[in-house]
Length: 273
Image 1: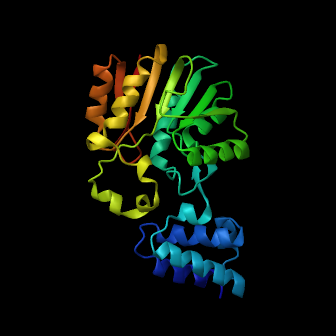
Image 2 (image 1 turned 90 degrees about the vertical axis):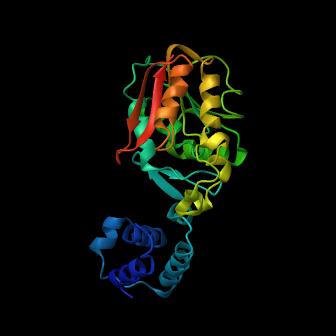
Image 3 (image 1 turned 135 degrees about the horizontal axis):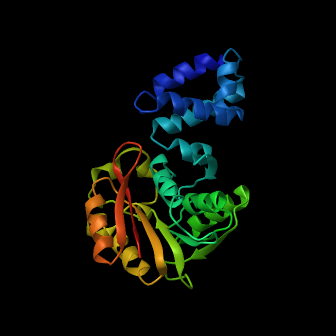
């Protein structure tokens, strides 16, 4: 079967996915170890039996709902490939809003930064690579997730420190910037039964108190772990902007503001200590 025909059939099979065409292309790229540009350039190439069989296995798994990132083992974030596993959240484009905000803050050249609940390490590693003079630490309570972050740091040549523990408890000293994409979904939220989140670790998604417990705890801990003038940035749900804004304001943070993602939804809230 030709590449273009295989992709056409795959798009039809994956029609229930909002990104059926992209899903099919990424899976076939993975099978062939080629880029999407190569697929389009050589669309008339014939796939051999082994390639078709491997593609079929991945398509069947995707039809059952497994995330493409799990099937190919990685997801791009801020232009870099990050390895993922079932022990981590899959990095999402909306989180790049946090990166962009952090890079615009008035921080010292050798800022001390920590990424809490790091998962794949996407946030902290990206900041370390974008600002090589920063001293960046990655923290996660999951040892399995921390191992994924360590692998990503090694592959991407990022100089970071990985710490095992809950939020800021394993951290010594004060920070210029604390960032986190913590669990913020209400356990009763119907979205937990839809899409990729069905295959992601619930502990990285769900928080008590209608999704606000971890956001509140990080805010509380951060008040004693930031230098004067230091910043806290929290990712949260699209309906939580006003509540998280109030959390930071009530904790004594100044210059508090909520920033929208590319879809126009409230995505992060930040404030200065």
